[in-house]
Image (cartoon, rainbow over all chains, first blue to last red):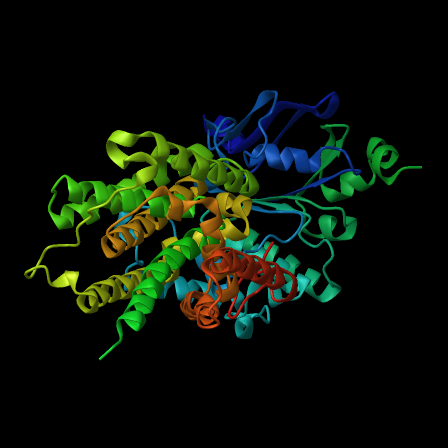
Length: 253
Length: 290
């Protein structure tokens, strides 16, 4: 029993998705373990971002299932999937451009804003707790002084950081990141790596797409290699580095 | 003593201000560019007018006008809430023509093209509100309530969700926000407020006809919101005053009325174009115009 429940923490089961003839996902299956960092690598057009859009409910798959905490979440709406505990960062920073950093982060912590109960605000003690969480999450990222800045006035790297912090603050049990260090300076990459590793220490589960192989292999427990819409190899970073199929498909000749 | 002309201007500013603030809520804060805002105003005015004529108590007239308009807004939001922004705008534009057509043809209630005469003002304190000076105070109370309500709302967690939906609906969904419901709430509240503005208007002029509610009248409201700056409440107040008073200057140049009327439209059209080209953020805009 214990084994099966651990297997069903997060499982992608034979997902197919095609766009007017072109197959984006063809029988993609894998499972990830709680408390680990898994990285999906693969050439452009392998279907990685499509897979993430299917996971977060933005795209409906043609067939297949996504099991999360032993429940089939495949047909749920994006906001429902999010509330079940899947927090996501997009390929390009998607902050709420005209809101401050503080408001962007508060939006991750507040919930049920549309219920009449907290139409005009949250209880004071809850608000205080949220502010504490926000300030401690910004610590060490060099963002504390930017907390009241409008998001669009931040540099791209800073926006990326805020977005990752926002995804971390959002109550979740799995964090899915689409190329978190894409277009980000080396110094920030290190910060993001530290953040992700600290999250893992806290028991968080992370699934990410990453093109930057060095970054990917430095954080991953498990690497999945995706090509032509399915997983073609799986293993530890070291084993993937030496895998013949992978070298042919990805590192290419 | 305030001259009656001055009182008239202040009341007009007040009514436009409530309408503009409610449009700002939908458009500036929630990203729903509602071209049908003027027809919401119209619906509020007609409900109020009809209710007073059939002799309903005045508080019920206001409530029915605001709540009725909110209900219409809610239905529109439910039907269009899953559409992309530009489709929403087109739908609301179409809706404004639908409203005019209904008013012209539903004669039993609206009296068709002849309009509704004999609308009453609220009848409390010995009909004191029939005096424009007191009616001005009544409008002023409405303006102040609207101002504080909207200010408070947009600063609340719900208001922040509205702004998040405006900035990036998909990202809001990913944070678990029910964006569909948010848009429905926002447009309904906006409808409630502009329905109230419409009933103030009907009570003030005491006669309404379909002529005042054509889509071209939307121009001034759009000008106010954009000139004031999207998502700026302070800017909206300033721009309402400026833009309502602006055409009054033309009055003093003693132009014939045949030029005065269309002249206003031309003035606002040119102003709107100039704003979009040269100062898209208006006086105090918080949001980039897209």
